[in-house]
Image 1 (cartoon, rainbow, N blue to C red):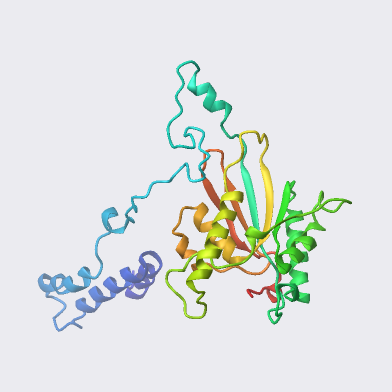
Image 2 (image 1 turned 180 degrees about the vertical axis):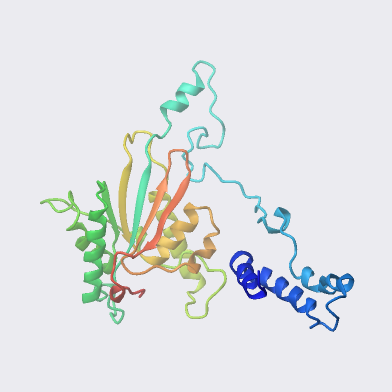
Length: 305
């Protein structure tokens, strides 16, 4: 096999590191490192530095170390094996296993968190911060996407702010069960936008004061506890619930639900009208199925205001 063919073969099989070693060996064999082609005994020792730059792979060197923080299965204080005071259930007269099974959740909750669509940033008050024409298009697209999923939605809750309320009403037109006479969507003040917790690392373009973090943080945490938890034992079937709210609220919810550091919420970005899907199992396990999915929108409709 010619030198050129061998070089191409190494390129295809070994990648950049293999090519570097092969080229160096070939260069030495031709005397490019100041030695003659017959000096085989001293050829490979001169590649010691090159070998040192390619350390051998070992699991100990490349496997991430666990943080040591175990998953808290009672994160929502609804673990059936634990009472509200944190003690294990004990009964001298009844079978504790049957009591626990009776109060054990059996259904899975699917929570679809929708960020409101683009709105008028120049509005002086919340009532003036309504959706832009593009924002209304985005809400239509989000509603169409939710309808296309073919799911039976159980409830649609939205923030009481104007942009979230308008987004929710447009979405509801595409969902069976929310368009009939007398059907009202649920509005909640706890889901209003705010500053959940001071972000780490800090940013320079947005700096709420300590009072805002103190007030908004308590409210948004209360919203998390109200809406993000495992199913009630009385719930028999899996549920699909829609919550239309705001980027800061959704990102904080995701961090809290996955037991990530909540101060990392600002490290994520969400497009307007995007869908974030959390699944909460009866055991208390939580999975993030999608984060800020907006792939159903054309590129020219995507915004992040």
